[in-house]
Image (cartoon, rainbow, N blue to C red; front, side, top):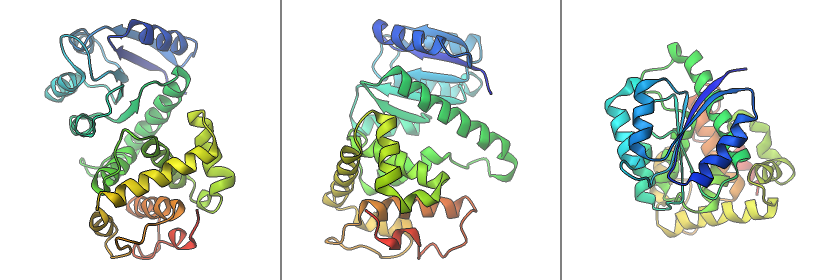
Length: 272
């Protein structure tokens, strides 16, 4: 079990307090420091090493994007995991956050418990990637970055709930491919538990995210990503097909898949 040092940068004192108090109850958090603005956060990062930075985008003195940019110029000060937790729902700003080095974006309101669980997931993924670093090129992207790149390319906006449910679904199928055959009984309920919602709302939100992508006319990008023409304007994939397509692609890129990427077997099952 790892031990983590966490820096929480947010202008909202009530949010900082609620998160800090929850994090302090876990023995894996050996230090949590609060910063009320981006400049204070940067000073803390320059003074000591933190494993995780949790930051708002909108802050006094130095906002979240400027903080990320400063860390890009001082890589020795940058934590291993950078989480943006914000009320901002502007796709352009969220894209810029990822481009400047954010590992993950969560939209407020968010419960400290779920924030903590996602942080542990990201830390575990980062540690696993570090262990395998010798086998990867220096430019290898994390799983979340790859999923985000797909979503941005096909036009799924980050501010809708389906974006986050869909990302979680793909992560779960990536690590446990057999879930694609148990969508309604295991996959949706699992996502619902993480987000404190219902399986039916998860299903509807994911369907909406896919429909938004098709409405934006990004079908050509979908076909380009998967390397073959599978869909037309009037041929939307089911939830299960889309999840399986993306998961299969990532599994193959990870070197775990033996099938032809043009024939993702799970996606052909027509799961909903």
